[in-house]
Every structure is written in C-alpha cells, then in structure tokens.
Length: 288
Length: 270
Image 1 (cartoon, one colour):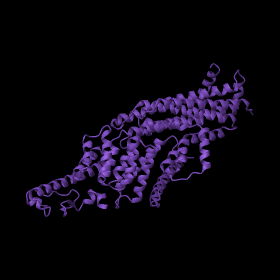
Image 2 (cartoon, chains in turn blue, green; image 1 turned 30 degrees about the horizontal axis):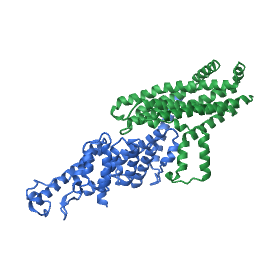
Image 3 (cartoon, chains in turn yellow, blue; image 1 turned 90 degrees about the horizontal axis):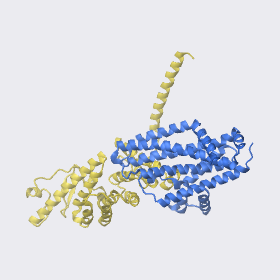
Image 4 (tube, chains in turn orange, purple; image 1 turned 60 degrees about the vertical axis):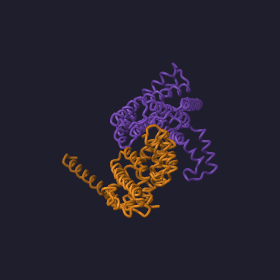
C-alpha cells in the first residue's frame, strides 16, 4: 500500500471512529432509563458474588452512589431527585454496607441526603444502626441516630439514649454528654437543635452541605433570640405579646431579624415562633 | 529435601520465564496505579479504599498466576513429554508432584512479595497525599492479610495439582480450579444465606440445604483467608484465628497433595 493511500485511510478511519463514538454517545442519552426499574443486588447476594473482593465491591457501590448524587446538582428539574432514585440511592448504600459494614463513608453520605432531602428518616436510622453495631469506636453514628430521633422523629428519649452512647466513645465534644441530659427538657428544643447542628456543621466536609447547615444554624439562632424575647415580654407584662412586632415596640428587641430562608416570622396563639419558611427548617415536623 | 529442591527451583525458573507473567504484572501495575487515582475520590476513608485496592490487586494477580501459569507448569511437562525425562531420574512420582508444588509455592511467595512492595508503595503515596484520611491505619493487619492471601493461593494451587493429577487436559484443570475457587470463596456466605434465607427474601429447599452443607466440608473454605476488610479498617485479628486458619490451610494443602500423589502414581501417560 502506498504511503498516501495509507495516510488517507488512517484519517478516514479516525474520523469515522470519532463521529460514530459521538453519535452513539448522544443516542444513548435518549434511551429510556426505566423509572423505578433500576435494580440493586441485595447485600447478602452481592456478598456471595463479590467472592473475596467484598471491600472493593463495597467501594464500587459507594462511589456509584456518590457520583450519582453529585451529578444531580446539575439538574434543572424539581424535585432534583425523584423518589425512586432516592430508594435506589438507599439500596446502593445498604448493599455497600452489607459488603463492608465497617465502611464509614456510605453511612455519612446516606445520613447527609436521605434525611434532609429524601425524608427517609427511619431507613437512614436503620442504615446507621448497622454501622453503629460494627463501628463500636465511632461516636458519629450514634450521634446522628440521636439527632435524627430528636430533630425529625421528635423522640427525645431515644435521642438521649444514643447521645449517651456516643458520649462514651472516644472523640466527641464535651457538649454531647450534657446534651443527652438536656433532651429531657422539651422547652429547650431550639437550643438543643443549635448544639446538635453546631457539631454536625463542624464535622461536615462537603462545602454545599456545610453552607446549608450554616443557614439552618443562623435561622435557629434567630428563632432562639425571638423565643427568649417572648419569655422576657411575658415576665415583664405577664401576658403573651399580641403580635411579634410588639417585641420591638415595647423595646424588648430592636428589630425582627430577617429569616435566612426568606420567610416571615410570626407568633401563634400559644406564643410559639413560626415562619412561613418552616418547611425548610423543619421539613419532617411540617409533614406530620 | 535434596530430591525436591532442584525440581522446585526448575519449576520456579520455568514460571518466571513464562511470558504470561509480563501480562499479569502489567495488569497489577495498572491496578496499583489506578489505586492512587481512585482512592482519592472517597469522602473520609481514603485509607480504607487505598488498602482495599492494593490488597485486592495482590490477590487478583496471585489468582491469575495460579490459574494461568501454575496449571500450565504441570500440563507442559505432560504435553511436551518432558515428564519422561524427569521421571527417568531417581525420583518417584509423588516426589515429582511435591517438588513441582514447592516450586509453584515459591513462585507464589516471590510474586506476592514483589507485588506487596508496589502495593505498599501505592498506600504510602496516598497516605502522604491525604495524611488526615487514614483513621485506624496499621501496617500489621495489612501484612497479615498479604500473608493469608499467599496461603490461600498456595492452597488453591494444591487444589489445581489435585485436579491436574487425574484430568486429561489443562483446560479441564483450569475450569475445575476456577469452580473450586468460586465455591471456596463464597461457601461461608452461601451457608449463612441458606441458614437465614429471610435476610435476602428468598426460600431454600431442604435439598439445597444438604448440598450446601456437604460442599462446605468438601471444598476448601478460601474465605477464611480473606482478611482484607480487617486490614482496611485496622481491626484486630485474634492469634487463635490466625493459628487455626493457618493450620487448616496447611492440613488442606497436604490433603490435596496426598490425593494428587496417590492418583498420579497410578496415572498412565500417553
């Protein structure tokens, strides 16, 4: 074959290769993905199929879940993640932790997204419980179960049990042991939530989540300020303020701070602080 | 020992000269290189993923070595009729089997040792790049996991010698050894599943139950030698576990060689 012919053939083949690859890739994107049909091999079966590579298979399951979750931030549609996708995400993490129950990352990833976004609180707690039983040196897992029980399920008794367990393990902040006993006082709900979230924000490395927690903390601190102002008003005038604005007019506070979530604060008939953005701050509470 | 050593050394040299070893080494180095890239994508437990990748690469490469070089080492003697030359010397057939096996075991130990150096290097690079993401990291369990991986491969190699002693072709030996490996690695999990099928939402017939129980005692339990997860999380392994498992490995290996020698003694060569 002459050099010219060979060069021509080479160029044509390269061009065809690039064109077909691009077209096939584009066409693949239009293939139906089958809503709800994505199957995840259950943990006990995956354990058999993984042979001696349980740890590696667990890493693979986790990385797939991580990549999927990260990729959803580019989506424009609302909700960002469909409910069947959250189920798939949970199944992936469940299988990852069945293969390697000591692997901390799937528990933390699941807890970060399945609670605040997917509202799968009980599923998340059962996932964390698996880790809690195996990683008996890790205080973060019982701490998160405790938080989920307190914040989303409003089960202070159970939350206190898990916090007490977390405080016995090496590493947690000193606040944790006292928080466990404080949970008995329901009127300190906002204060307790702030303490919990401060620990969580400190431990979160994901920048997006960290920002979200900081906004939540800011909202809770404003709520606490308003709650304390209502208490001061009650002590001074022996009655509930007729409306939230009265706290300013009577000089208890100088102004009503803006809600970081863009909502408006108000006072209900029992003197509780409310906001039109409460579903963002306490999603599960609002649902019940 | 004077009878076994020359044969073992010859087998080892033959194994080293095998070109398939270059391919296997290439796969191993690619995997270990990938370790540096992949483990960095984990959230907190980068150390765990790095150890997983390194140990899995070592085990997988060792497996390829046993399956594609080990089996051929014996088959080649039969195919090329060089076995007549060996057996014409003052060496019995059982001694031939044991000598060959020692050579293969030496090849496994040396290969695993070389791979371990590179595996450890990939872990050291990750540890240097992400020093804060190696909680509960200890070298002791990692070395133990490598040692047990080598023991498991030596056992599997003995199983392949047993199959080769009666099989007429190296392909059949390969298939039987792969089958024994898969069964051996999954036996414990299958047994656990059969004993508690509700965990996976399945039902198990009594016949399956009996078959699994029989297989449990018949096939080598290779999953006992898998300490990768313990190494990745720096979990303690009790000395009694180490002792009993090593003894089990030694006993099963000797049993396989005993049967291989017994069958090979009566084997008729073409």
